[in-house]
Amino acid sequence: MIGTYRSPLVVLLLRLVSCGIYRLYFCYVVTEEVNRYTGQNEQSPLAEVVLTILTCGIWHFIWDYRIGKRMAGMCRMAGIAPTDNAVLYVILGFVGLGVINGYLQQEILNRIWDARPPYTSGGGYQAPAAYPPPPGPYYR
Image (cartoon, rainbow, N blue to C red; front, side, top):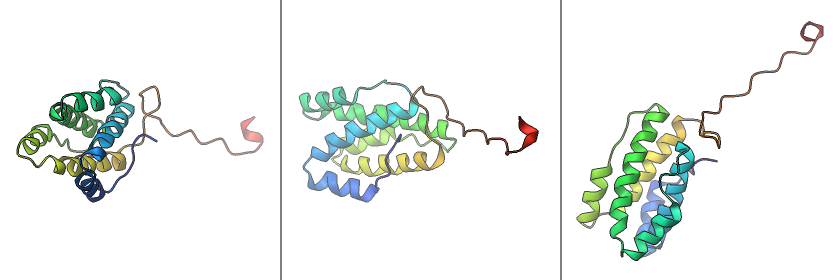
């Protein structure tokens, strides 16, 4: 499976009550899902989490911006109106409301999962298998 449907409200609540631990988990999982969906490994999930820890959360501003830009590209790939909230994520983070970012990001991801069938491991669209011919002497 490419991406997981999550309730944006649950993401918000878990970010609030976990004192930042869920934020790291969310960062890892979302980076992994975005990489799988796009077929590009632009960001390493583990590196994103480690850099966030080593910089005491500063790297997370960069992650929010980059993932926002990548999710806008995913919207285009899925054929839905692109939602580029990259700058909004950074502004919310700077004013102390970064916890809302997870809600907004998951909301967009859920729309993407609804709009587009998954990509194959090779990064291309997986078309449905052709219907087999009906049984009978006409198709031998």
